[in-house]
Length: 252
Image 1 (cartoon, rainbow, N blue to C red):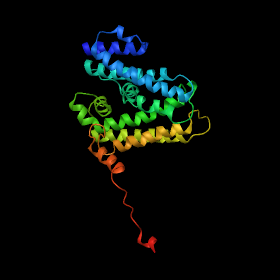
Image 2 (cartoon, rainbow, N blue to C red):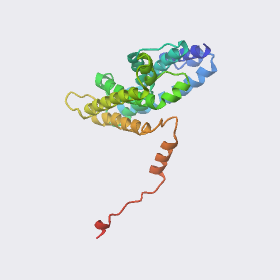
Image 3 (cartoon, rainbow, N blue to C red):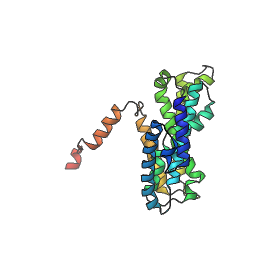
Image 4 (cartoon, rainbow, N blue to C red):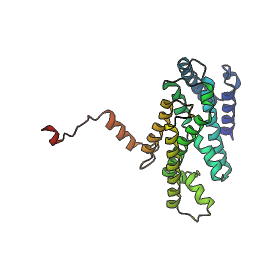
């Protein structure tokens, strides 16, 4: 309960976003977390606002607030042992996958100016939801065994539970893979769409590149909790020299 009260207090302070926040709490944990967020978001917001020629810090605050509310919802389900419906879980889960603070602020640094009307547009939200849905489903498929041991629900276990255990893990994962393929196809369609699109193409490309990165991370395992394979891939790109293979026929 103490942790939940601290989390609620943190949400309240973030929602106010007041420079006098230190006077509003005596919790050392909340002070440490909010101080880090306050400084990081304001610094990022200042740089992004200069490039965008308008204030965007409020949007960065909203992104973090949305993420934290979704995380709190998942914590409530865990504490109360409530089993949400699948659509309810996914509506919350694509946000709790936590791509918001990663990809959305980065859009302000891509190059094109993004007016308020663009970041509030349904196209912007749909692009974010599609790539985040791919990530959530991939994460749930690869993290099913680990999260099951931790007592956490995810997309795989929920589908099995709601089927009254009449469907196998393998069948569930095949079903989820089809949903990933469908979301990825729709994402690519939106990225390539020109007529009626309000999100600049360079920004849409960033959503698509993130989708490809997610598929790399979850290709064989959970790349975030089992980083060895990812570390090897990164080291190969950065540290290992390129060894071109010469075609003997081309040398003649």
